[in-house]
Length: 129
Image 1: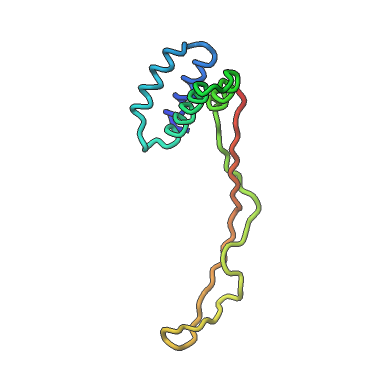
Image 2 (image 1 turned 90 degrees about the horizontal axis):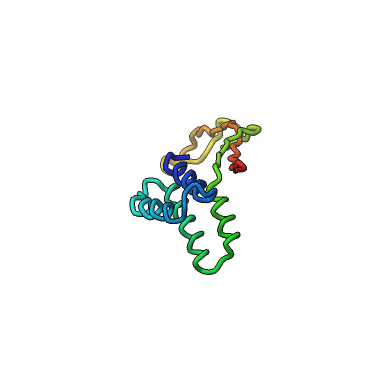
């Protein structure tokens, strides 16, 4: 998680628990939106999600639902990569095998590849606040 994403989540959490008021958060958030760069896609996505949550409030969504949505966005997240059992990638036929080469009109030995590697699983966990 980038430093900017952490800062956004921290500021949002402070607002939600009452450590900063709505006006302070809005001023900081408006400044953040003006300065956000596409080079920070995670921060940009989070900021837009927060922006939409506030827009939902203006469109009449219940305050409790908006607050719940904002709380979900403020929670710290982590991702874990877990290696599972190996999987076979590539051709598992007889090595080397014979293939026809149309360019030279003769048979040539072509080596097939066999790779064993761990199967990746990416788990996204949300830590409870």
